[in-house]
Amino acid sequence: MKIDDAIKVLKDNGHKYTDKRKDLITLLHESSKYLNAKQIQTYLNDKYPGISFDTIYRNLHLFESLKLIETTELDGEKKFRLACSNHHHHHFICKSCGDTRVVEHCPIDTFKDELPEVEIESHKIELYGLCEKCK
Image (cartoon, rainbow, N blue to C red; front, side, top):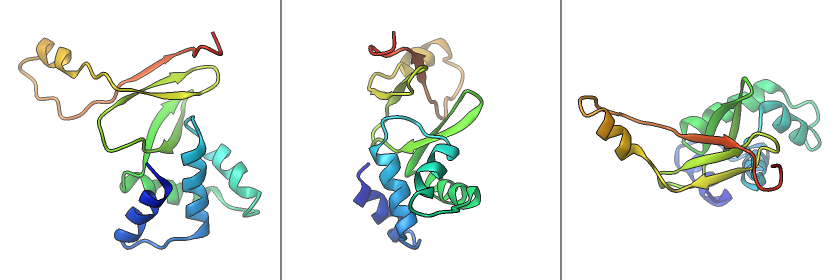
């Protein structure tokens, strides 16, 4: 997702556009990894000294409700990244450096074949391992 598209979604849904929100969206856009709240706070604290975790989490919750960000849980904590796109995809996440890449292939038809009597409402597949640089 582009920064301008994310800002438009905020405005179109009646939310204020602030420098903090733009900087948070920009950070998530520029990162090739999922980030935790502490990493986000550390980055934003340079420009906004004393920015609280409450402010970070409140904005992340808003962004998640507007589908501006994707979330995952790694190493026992929730992490965030700007939504990649509007099309269906999955991710490969390097367990060493955190580099995250889009995986276009989706094996959902295999699961539907194995579970013909169930109705699958949604799914999320993440692949974990070591990238070329870390292996």
